[in-house]
Image (cartoon, rainbow, N blue to C red; front, side, top):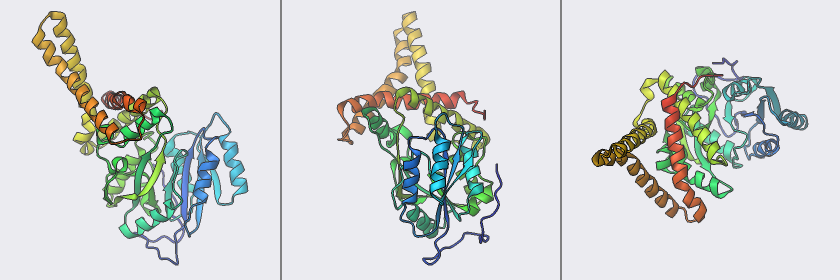
Length: 351
């Protein structure tokens, strides 16, 4: 993990701000292959209605397009934007490089595809002040542009799809295990040594764990919303959730005390459905009806729950088209199966 030089004028303990002193905010962005979206993403940040000083640090990884050139052009035009290199291209390394270069008392993480409202920074700073937390974050507001993406967005904001984490499904403001992206007091990042560069995925969850282990508070507020674009295809969604599962297994192996029933639900379901299907087919092959019936109970039970949850989700989302609604069962099954298989498979290690 990285170590950072303290920002100027920081003191021990949580820093308080007043209306006459708004903290310097450094917005950090790790980007790779973002030529098409980078200008718009930075424009959104620079147009924030925050009254204090604000800078943007872009950590550029090796890209197949003109991302580096576009970032350099923006920095040449705009003195509030600086560019740092991220040779490995890995997200936690890019985040640490950006933090190292930042001068802010508050560090706000924004991803290249994230779309933040114009009051995002102001609300984040105010929430840090009123809550006394080390990190605040809000809702990962999934929104699609195609029928498939609309269906994925609905699945990603439902308890059956992703569990009950407030940053997915919403909730009341208060302490949380983790939040989406994050707006940090700089001294909290210094205290825990930054992002763990060996965590290519789940680095936010792991970072928030260390903040909590060192006495800090991670705070969720529904007042912060970040628009997120889901993956555009079933294959891309499968790879995403498989990686999520593998890296959540890595967190569990390093921190066994963090394992919960919620995180075991998908791997248990995958195991039960797979074993049940094998027993069911074996029973059919042997001509033993009762064995087949017992075996198929698990996959049939999951199918029933999946279809029921899909009907409920579609009914609660009248804007979904019929095609999007019909895609929900396959999307739920893909998310659960790939996350569960990734967790069971494990073996995630930095490349």
